[in-house]
Image (cartoon, rainbow over all chains, first blue to last red; front, side, top):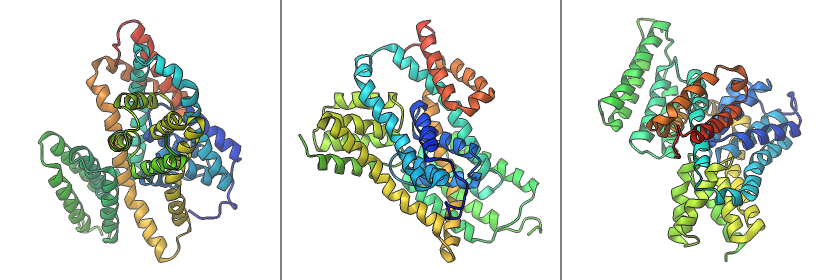
Length: 238
Length: 185
C-alpha cells in the first residue's frame, strides 16, 4: 500500500515482460480470465500481498478499455516499478498484435473449418473451470462472511444479468452503496450469524432466479435488508 | 481512405467508451464502423470479430490491429493498437497514483472505496463467468469436456499454469470433433 516502490524487493522488468507475454500469448478466453491469471502469477512471486493483488484486479475492472492492459500496467508497476509497468504493457500488447499480423491470413482461409470451431468449444469447456476458480477465490476472499458484501455482490450480478444494467453503472452504483454502508457503525458477528447470513444470501439469489421476483425489487430490498441487519445489535454482541 | 489521426482518435474513443471488456465493446464498434461511417460491410465486420476471438489477448486489441491493417497497412495497425492501449492507461495511471499516494482524510475515503469495490468486482466477475458458462451448459456435447477439465483442475501443475489446461481442452475438443462426438459450433 505504500508508494515506495524503490524500497521493496522487485524482479527485473525483463522477467515481468516474459511473464505477461506468456500469459497474454497462451490464454484463450478474454479479459476476465486474463486478469485472474495475472493476479495468481503476481501472487506467486511473493512480492505482493493478496490484498494488493485484489486491489489491482478491482482497478483494472473499474478502468475502461481492455482489462488486460490495465492489469499488466499495475502488475508491472508493483513488481518492478515504472520500467516494469512499461514492460508489462508491451508484454500484454505484443502477442495479439503479432498473432493478428501473422495468423490472420491463415485463419481467415480456414474459418469455416469445423476443427477451429471445435478447438474453441473445447477451450470454452476448460474456461468455465479456470474462470470459476478465479471467481470463487475472489468471492471467498472478499464476500463470504460479510452479509453486506454478499448482498452487494448478488445485487450487482443480478442487476447486470437480469435488469440489463450496464456494468459501468453497476460498478459505480455498487461502490457508492458499499461506501455508504461502510460509514455506518459495524457490528462484530459470530460464526452462527455468518452462517445465517450465508443462508439468507442463497435464499435471495434463489428468489430472484426461480420465483421471478423482479430483480429491481430484489436489488432494492436486498440492499435495505442488508443495511438494516448490519445496523442491528446482534444478540447483545456489539 | 482515412487519416491516421482519425484512425487513432476513433480507436481511442472506442477503447475509452467500452466498458466491461471484450464482447461488450462489439455493438459499439459496429455502430462506429458500419452504421455511422460505412467503413466496412457487416460481413467483413463479422469476419474480424470471429478472428479476434480466435487469437490471444483482449478482443478490442485484436480488432484494432486487424481493422487498422485493413485501413492503412502495418502503420495503421500500429497506430490503432497504440490508441487502444493508451486510452485506458490514461485513466489507470492517475487512479493507481491516487490509490498509492492518498494520505490523511483522502486515504480514509480511498480505503472505503477500495473495500466497497471488492464485492462489486466479485459480482462483475460472476457475470463474466455466467456469460462464458451459458453456451457450455446449453451444449450437451460439451458436458463431458467440462467434466474432464474439472477433473484436470485437481492436477497441481494445471492449477499453476491454467493456460495449459485451456489449450489441452481446446485440443481435446479437436480430437472429439475428429471422432465425430462433437459437432462444430
